[in-house]
Image (cartoon, rainbow, N blue to C red; front, side, top):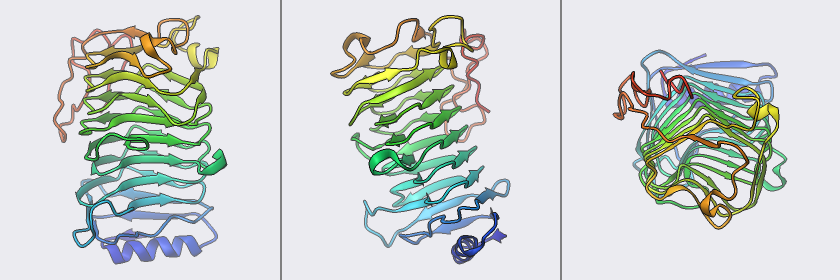
Length: 314
């Protein structure tokens, strides 16, 4: 179903929720003004895509700041949001919240939000949000001050999540990626740069079986990795094998203002696994750091990381 207005979007989601089979929505240019857009509740799976060049604009001028608004709330399984560009004019508290299993968000551009760009929320007891995949998205323009559960990507109480290939950058005062009470999470080939807090932040309750590899963590206003709680890293070949025969993780830590690591559980990088977790400390020579450029946070042509991390985003 093609959607050209907010009313049509509401009707399309409600029809999909009522339908027993899988559903598809294609977005044209639309503006969201409602403080409570409909949740995705179709366990057969809803796919939302966008026509080339279109934009979803959040412009809730009639609502007060800080309203708990979520543009896409995935409260059922097997949904896919693919290739949607979201621009925030006013009052987008969250953009995408994943609250059930086996959901995918990929190839999206989130340009402006208040509290969280993409939020994987397993709820109490970590019984939801399993196996979420957040892939190849650009998340920028976050405005809220640094705090727990505030960041470009936040993963809480979830297992088996994959956060890979994303560019999380230029989020004013907040962390790039936050992780709380996660199990078997895979954080791979992300560029986490120029955020107002730390690049990676482990907080709240401990996380375990965490694979963090081949990420480019640069120019953040605080730490490359901040752990105020214990974090146990995956040292098996499932994490390290594709990079080397030993426990080498291949991450790049460059020019983070407060250093490589910190937090009560990671002073002096004491929380890191054996091997070269920060294998590189090299300037990526980004082609551009201007939102809207095709080369946003692509490695520069002469960067030494091209043969190492191969962190090239298109």
